[in-house]
Image: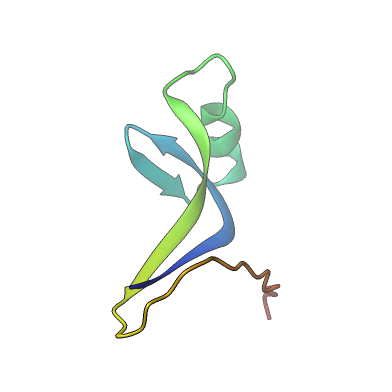
Length: 69
């Protein structure tokens, strides 16, 4: 299988196993309190798995800049 992981620049908070993303800055400031141990900063990561008839080994990474239009 070919596995691709894509990390988007969207940051969120992980709370009780769930990724909270697209939160307003005011909510992030309140939730991202250093005294809280149940909330951590987290990145939004998507995983894509494709079956293949080939034998694949190794890994590679690439940075793709994304701009908003």
